[in-house]
Amino acid sequence: MGRLALLLLTACLSVSIMAAEAIKGERQETFGDMTVHYNTFNSTYLQPDIAKAAELVRSKNQGVINVSIIKGDKPVIAQVSGTVKDLTSKSVPLKFKQITETGAVYYIAQFPVDQQEVRTFEINVQTGDKINTINFNQELFPGE
Image (cartoon, rainbow, N blue to C red):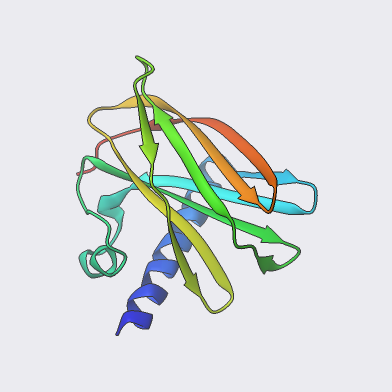
């Protein structure tokens, strides 16, 4: 049952990534031969059983960030950390958890979304001794 739930979570996250790419273009950064893919979405997009299996809170006031690192066509294990800031520069640390499946590794974290606003994300991806940083802005909306 656990593997099925993770498979469904991966499918859901993949659909969310594809939807975001279709709307805003692909969100990725390339560092040498490594590509970091990232996406944010409201946790209400997750089905309740999928959110529970991934230990995510499903709420209109909770966002999710999904990060994956690819080298060639293979997933990369990394240390992922970061922060999200609101317009007043209040910073919230992102606590990423790793989800590993056959052929895929994802890092997910949640953050509060209390109102519609643009947030600034800083994501640090460490592989070995090297740390790469991604900074981006995202307009967020509370869910339904």
